[in-house]
Length: 294
Ligand code: SF4
Image (tube, rainbow, N blue to C red; front, side, top):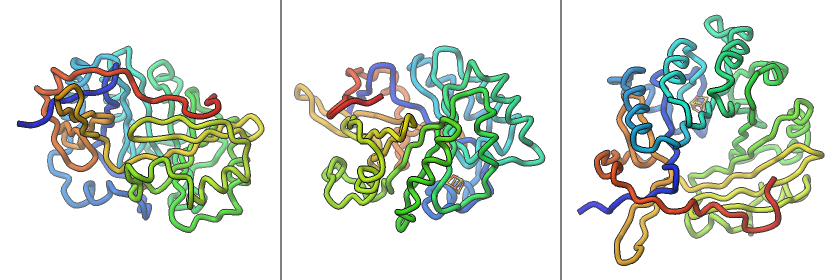
């Protein structure tokens, strides 16, 4: 028999893959193949159906739209954002491409119209440029909070970290640096020794503190008022644990695939929807473990 599900109060974060691709080829991308090789059944309506299903089960969960590129199709993005009922936090992960279909003015207007629905737009900007970037000023004109997500992949330019941070500090934007999570394990998640990203951050910025849970952790820094976080996570989002004699699959993220299929993990595991309707809740185990986290 499959294990029972457990998740945190409020429900696991629901990440919805938009059913259309981006134009980039980032070397660390794990989604590209899926968009290119097998785009069968990709559908906005199917994604919306699953959004409604997750809302029914966990009416307070967070939704994240990712891709592919959410901003590649403005009309479809609007349909999906509109489909999320009130009461949820909504995040959009994007490179924020400017196109004929979605020029700057339309992006700004999109954020104005949706400012009460969108919690934050997470814009990917990397120290090595993998994508064609829209100009930084655009980020400061949006009507919703913006955070910069920066993947530090392999041999990033160590001496460029301060300039990179200051490039966005100018607009008051926080940054989340992200390690290559494909090499993270339960054993090394909290290991500091040999972590060159952490060494660079400690050297360059004021260290504030650490928070974390079973599956991910974050080191927090201050760069003259700019908040900088360093995020480490596992390449999967289910932890199996025995609690009071019962074995549970503890779900941190659940997914909506491009064809609307609900999954319980990033590793291709379909979600047992009926079992999730009877999920057991536990208090969220994310805690401040050291110092302070602003
Ligand atoms: S922009 Fe995102 S989806 Fe596109 S290749 Fe880069 S990581 Fe992958």
